[in-house]
Image 1 (cartoon, rainbow, N blue to C red):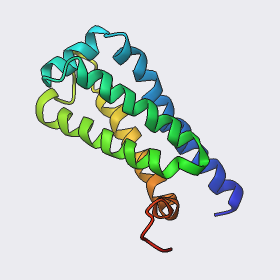
Image 2 (cartoon, rainbow, N blue to C red; image 1 turned 120 degrees about the horizontal axis):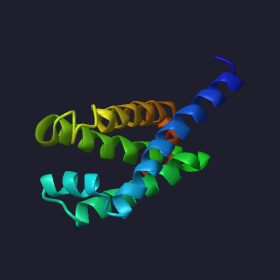
Image 3 (cartoon, rainbow, N blue to C red; image 1 turned 60 degrees about the horizontal axis):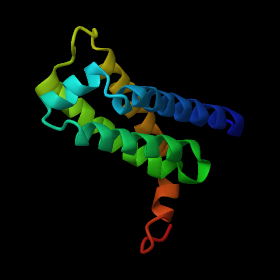
Image 4 (cartoon, rainbow, N blue to C red; image 1 turned 60 degrees about the vertical axis):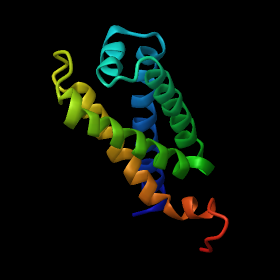
Length: 133
């Protein structure tokens, strides 16, 4: 893969993951009925909705900054793993007749973020002070 192709691919992954997380923030931060329902079902309303929304905002920003992409990607993988776990255990794949859209968005974000974490794994290691490359 050429450098240009690699660069385009990583930016596509960054933009997809960040865009999905950022677009859901409006619903979390404005207490949209769907978000309140989800976090009430999980017994995490309102602190979980606002806390997770804040972490998704941080992850999105970190993913978009080239020097911190790996940190944002790892954070997003953790957040999306939690979202997927809750969909598979407590919420169901379809939430309030959404046709599984939230589940699919979490899956896509998880995949993009996991790919970024792998691509930028050397960058992540550089943030751990006692590990040498």
